[in-house]
Image (cartoon, rainbow, N blue to C red; front, side, top):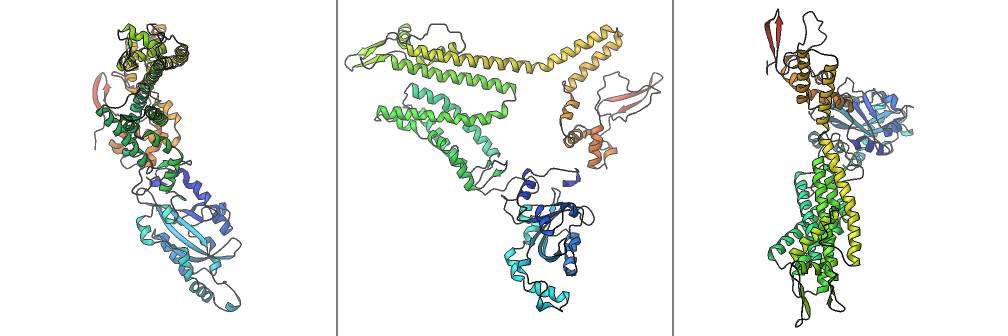
Amino acid sequence: MPGGKRGLVAPQNTFLENIVRRSSESSFLLGNAQIVDWPVVYSNDGFCKLSGYHRADVMQKSSTCSFMYGELTDKKTIEKVRQTFDNYESNCFEVLLYKKNRTPVWFYMQIAPIRNEHEKVVLFLCTFKDITLFKQPIEDDSTKGWTKFARLTRALTNSRSVLQQLTPMNKTEVVHKHSRLAEVLQLGSDILPQYKQEAPKTPPHIILHYCAFKTTWDWVILILTFYTAIMVPYNVSFKTKQNNIAWLVLDSVVDVIFLVDIVLNFHTTFVGPGGEVISDPKLIRMNYLKTWFVIDLLSCLPYDIINAFENVDEGISSLFSSLKVVRLLRLGRVARKLDHYLEYGAAVLVLLVCVFGLVAHWLACIWYSIGDYEVIDEVTNTIQIDSWLYQLALSIGTPYRYNTSAGIWEGGPSKDSLYVSSLYFTMTSLTTIGFGNIAPTTDVEKMFSVAMMMVGSLLYATIFGNVTTIFQQMYANTNRYHEMLNNVRDFLKLYQVPKGLSERVMDYIVSTWSMSKGIDTEKVLSICPKDMRADICVHLNRKVFNEHPAFRLASDGCLRALAVEFQTIHCAPGDLIYHAGESVDALCFVVSGSLEVIQDDEVVAILDHFPQNQ
């Protein structure tokens, strides 16, 4: 019971699970350190098999295992065990105990106190190992006629080497780390987790995946991924060689950051299948190599630097430009970050707009690539007058012309104009407007337009459907408020409530709603379990508990029991709380504001809220 606040608290998720898993290899008892004689509160299957007692037989018996003492059990050892419990110390013993069938067995017994966050010993952990095989037989032909003490002395003398094999605890270490079960039992953290929830101890070069630095770094990678999702399709479709030094430097910096991200991922913890934090460097490396390493490596290669060289073959340049599309696979990791924000309406709205714009941008790049591929027939080296690029060039006054000396086609709209025109066409198609000034003419363009219209209809329905739902949720409380006011007005009108009383009712409803924002506290508390509901009620009534002297010496359990029964009542100005002669069936505390005590239409006293540190 950490700190004595609760009667029963579930420990860390994997604590009992891992104890059960290890029950065949270890045996232990947990004793309550807060009750006289330290009764057993838990016994694992390993101890039951080792001792022959059922769990029901062991529960509530002393953790000193006095019920297993016998005639050959050393009295000095019994006294040392008792002193260890009395002094809340850690110690280890070789002790002769008796099973349920009274068979004597030598045990190596380790005792360790378990402390809570207030450094108070709340439990005793007693572990047992059977060392009978390493001992001399308790009774044989050579010991017949010997006293009990002589037989016990010989057995202890001949077993000193066994203690080295069992690796007893380092008492100095336990003094400083007595609150950690893994170290008390001398088991690795991967076998037995800590008693209470603590930040996992990681090597110096390992980064926790939920620390502030990693969270900030992930958001930087998220922004750069969106930048990549915009620039990569544009560079691939418009075949831009990054001759601009500023853009080349920027893309190179992005590549370096992606490369650093790979290095950090090799040193970042992750959550295992059982919900535990994995900090083992070897497991981290294997997990990353199996999941995102290949995609991340392909996404950080310096394609732009290779394409920047003038002497690079056109085919190789196109190949490297196409490989840059692999970077878009990083968007799969973006979805995991956005899952945490889908419950907020505004975040969903912004996300849908961004997705719509990103899809329109990608389709615009594909639309231009189709036109650029079809505008010039490479076989006949002639211009295709039915291509949308040719029609656009004529409409804006920049027609294509053939350079006879160089043998190539020149002219045409600028790349900026081509991109804007492509984005304009995809936007009008996705929004089902379609002005028709830019229209598909070839078969490939028409097929692409049909596919784009299908995608646009789905996006259109999804976005506007979600927008309608979001706005309905935003105004749900307001609609409920006005509906309640209308019902109250109809009630007052139907039953002809006097004007003065009607005004008081309306003032009360309006003021109460402004304070509670329409939240039904009782409904929210009914969802929570009993323990959590008590914690919330203590928080809601913290001002009363902290400031009123009546609760100054109350225990946590008392405050929790009282808080569940408290009700917060709002009184509008002029409301009568109690009339003279009424029976008082509740105890009220004034949290804010003041009350007047009126007798014969005169104010005889004013009750104010209690001052701080009264």
